[in-house]
Length: 266
Image (cartoon, rainbow, N blue to C red):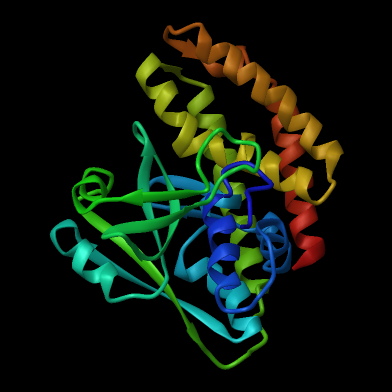
């Protein structure tokens, strides 16, 4: 069993667990480091993403192709998910494990008529390593459309990420401008809370996780100061102009240093 070793890494721990069934011994942080995850950012559908939020076929194949595997994803309608899984040996999918907390699990076959799921979690977490779900229980835990991922053998190839890193620099520059614009205007409580995931998470949460992963503590500490300021502002639970609460100069300095770090690895 491969456990999570950094924040929000359930899908990366899941990939490590999935690979273990094919005789490959790895872990979430090794995958992240070997694919250059700390140096990657993306913008999609109005949101910024980095670190463990970069997941799925496109991103995991940066690592998998170097070891002779490839991930293939398929969207499966909820009504078909049980039949679909029964025809697979192993697969990764997202289910609601507790309440509305959704994360990646690994389907490993049937046991006593139930779907056996490996629960990718922290080693010390008070959760079972394995979930056994009846068809009814599984259907209660998935969305109307389920993304199911499987691994296939592939030709080993060298994967170059220079273009992705250059794109990441552009994304961070765009993020800097959008944060400055957002923080210069008074925003409603709802807008501020929504921005936690769409705008700030990539740099003030997952970005920090990635910097800590590679030991870049100086940049990380700057971002943690702004993270604390941001969370204190959110807790006020009222309309705010965030540049009155956040040290935007410090944030911009940290992002510039992050950009320079990516340039050095591109």
